[in-house]
Length: 147
Length: 147
Length: 147
Image (cartoon, rainbow over the protein chains, first blue to last red):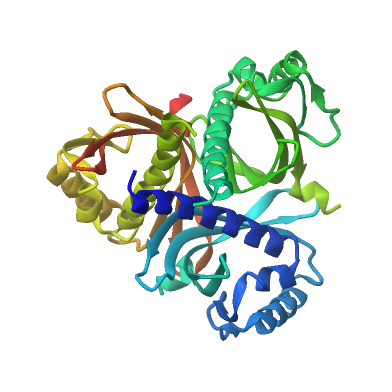
């Protein structure tokens, strides 16, 4: 077992756990916990046509505004489901993580959720004081990338 | 590599493999193999409004009854697809596992499956004689949790 | 930590990374990169009723033909999303990998993707010069398996 194999194995499990905790926070509406998974100067580009949110407080603010605007009159349970995670560590210690994401939206009393859009996501992750953090997240929506 | 990092890495892969084998058993209709992945006194609350099934034989019985009732006249291939697995080991050795689940139901000759409902699942896992087992599984259906 | 536990942990992360890179290649239309993840004599049975494609160049050729035929007049972004991966190493070093797959197809300007079909996949993986390769991949479509 080489050091590299060992560290990629650990990194894979660690990023999966990091993403799971991060998205469970987002999907439960805990936007402060979600934004705390970004670096202080983190960047989050989640919707085409909207400027990227920047800094932890900017990301939390953007999420509060977005949810107020879209879901205040339309209570939903959203779930972000990631798959096909690929990790590419850089020599400077940052990690490129690319993966797919489906957004699943359930409405009260409606058994069948809306599943849209399908996205490709590119995270740049860094480690601060031993903890993984997202330095940037760029979400590309497949139905718009084709236009 | 700390012991904790090593064991969380191993635990992550082990739980993923455990869940995959467990759900491939369920989705192939092998309810006895599925119920054998629970502790002898295990508990499985899978559908709101139905009491939780208890004990291995109780869980197998409940699954046979449920499938007879719902699918005897409607042959389907169901698949349970988990994502965003988060593990929190307790000090007593039990492990809380929370994750998302989509239920995918295909019918003969119909290319597009029904994908419903979207669920959040909470497992309590324990280890007996070296093997992971589910002590309890609680499934919350998103479209009902919002009511 | 036994050697077996260690190697299954590493294998799990390695296969996940292998699958992620393989499918990101396929979904970006890089059929040569995709076919290079098979052994030279690899076999890929992806659609019932079509004969399995064989050899790297045969697989690349088949994919070019298939995409030309199906998508030349219908530009789409497809994503193959795997879940519930189960690994069973054989004594000869090959690895059986079974998992679920959803095919997600987005069209320009249409937010909701088509999600079909639901599949069960069986890979036989081998290691050559330290690298995992797919020796065979058989895809079963759930809506056809029931007929």
